[in-house]
Image (cartoon, rainbow, N blue to C red; front, side, top):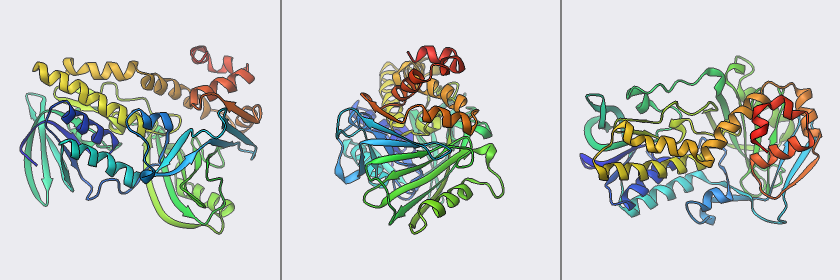
Length: 398
């Protein structure tokens, strides 16, 4: 690790890796600083992503794909099952990744392109000069080193301490932090090509429970509930344990991963003077599903692209870097986040009876395009009354 780079990236997840790789491909020097001793571990993610989302950045590789999905199932509070299948018979609509291998692959690609990587190295504080971010103080083995940079890209996850130290308000309301627990389970009976989502206030209040296959008789089995619904005796783990005891009584848990996911709107602004914020740190997780892999990769690559332009022009002010903020908000991804936030807010207000009514209305869907948007459009088509409930939002879904 040198003491000066064009771009310093805080965090070695998908956002940070794509940012560093893009930066060096643009002819800049870049370094990834990762606080964990190993890239990709521990995994705090259900690991699902759409096929198109992967192909936008790279070709799928069997080495980091645990399972290929051709459909999904939604289970209503009363146990009614709604099947979602692709119209293209046998087509792959998504993957469940092995994030330990996937994240390492992304960082390896960044390193091969020319980026430096420093693991077990923690950003201890930003270097600020007259309010402008000029790099970071990095702690490694008890020693602190000053590393200067023209632009710092914060990709340090949902905790995002670096952005906060730079004066960015990163507060997330308690009700919009999803308290999550996930088990990796084996020796369980599952459909290894379909994800399963369980809804209901008795199952996962203001959230959902998931089963994401990771191969034959193995899956990520997890839950996310609203932070305001969590408390003694009814925490996320309590709900998950009850589900596992009932559904997979003979299954074996081989990993236990607790964590939190923000399901709020993105940060009001994702840039500052010399600073850009990406991925979970920018709160660009899908508020409806909690998914964030694609969004992290998209914002990481875009941030580095804009940073390269601004460095080339000799202007890394907040005003110049705002091109990044404006572009991701206007993108398909940005519009989906805003739309899905409203859908999430609608769904968490519904009683179990209402959720049953909605899911019962469509026993089976065959979708040309397997996305949240097409699913919601189809549900509204067969439930015209929802147009009134969703109001202005429904009009935008047409």
